[in-house]
Image (cartoon, rainbow, N blue to C red; front, side, top):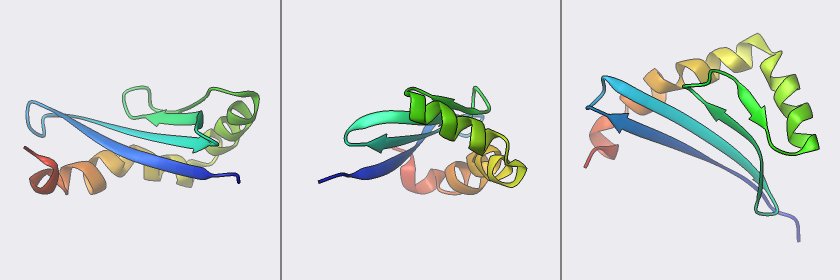
Length: 83
């Protein structure tokens, strides 16, 4: 059985002043690509992940959605995620 999944994480430092958004993609429990808002682009960890990262990084609409996730996903849901 092959399984593909992804996770999205919001890390809040000092309330909503400093927010970090991380999205990780896995295939068969192996992380193959990751987006980190502090880095600003996707990084591949396997040969397939490097190809996926190059493809997604070259798509301006996809990257704009990732870059703005800090606001529309993390900051918007701060009340829910905050301890």
